[in-house]
Image 1 (cartoon, rainbow, N blue to C red):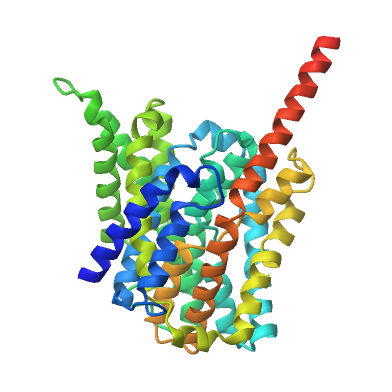
Image 2: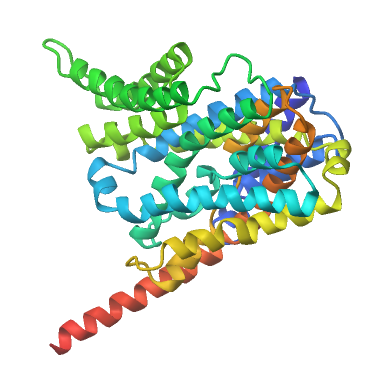
Length: 402
């Protein structure tokens, strides 16, 4: 644990020291933490020794926090305005992505069909950490930001029941988690209910007679809501990822100033937790894992990144108001990250057949996705911003001429 703490401190210091460079180049704090983790992990100095359950817990907490923070950028009015393209990406694009990943796993690596479907469910969701590289940039057109934010905020919660259901089909036991379809659907619904009820109860408490909040402490109230909600999800079995995003959205809807008040606190907290989770993830990347994946595993990972999401998502967005460049950007920017790591950890301890291969292929895909998407986000953002400025300039010129 000492090695992990020291490595985290070094990575955090380097991330801060390179933050100005990161704002002007493909470098990012995510890539810094990942690079330091690889150097300190089994592939390098081997000073990080973290148990698999710790990796799963770190990924879950980091993902939960990030989804809660992202939800604050998606008020209910935003969800209503942008539900059509988001629904297309979630309800059509995501199942197609799962299916394509399963087909690639079976044809490229020879993995049997049921473990391939498990792998498809593990890798289907996009990661809000890497997506935030575009979602958090206000020079990126709002429709693109909203679509990516809603999609990455919801699909992690939707993927969890699929993972658990398929692990059960594969003969695995996800340790206390239900694999019954109706129970999983109930957990989804309960996540939505708690995500609305807990923030609403806090909002009413703030307005109770003889009570009041100091503005400077209000962000801590949001932290308290997140902690209480997480505890309730653990207690009731509710889907924590869906609950987190819904709770953030509810807070932003009930209190419009919540987003700006909590943004700084939420972003810093998210960065710290995602850094710790990335270091924990790096501790899994040993030589044995890469030998299990093999060369075909890397071929599979590349195909997942460049085919399995871009093709179906671009197709389902045809006919929307997004431009071709915007559709291409959304289709490409489907990074794999913490949700896949957390779900791979569930698989690893489930006892299902071929679990080791599923975990190895997941880890390789997440690693390559982190490198590919964190190195292209700045370029994509710049191109989208240029197109947006050109479109607005053309519209202004036409209005002036009229």
